[in-house]
Length: 96
Image (cartoon, rainbow, N blue to C red; front, side, top):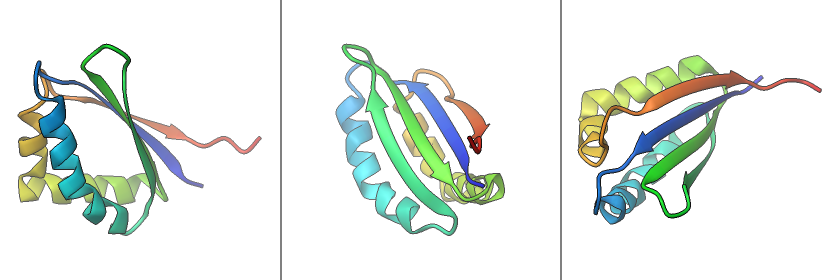
């Protein structure tokens, strides 16, 4: 059963376009990563808050991906557009 990862971040004033450009650069590799299923990124209307709604095959796959991005320095680069460290929450998919 897949896991949903929700990353929420508040973006610094004037940094939304920079974040969008960085994501265009990095998302192709994200989509090719083992265990990746889907990602949707949303911006709160008239706000600088973004939500990354991600689906991964397992939490271990996501943790491996996050560690790889951290080791590469990508999280630090993205973090330069954030006001504070993002919140990351994990949700199991219910079989209903």
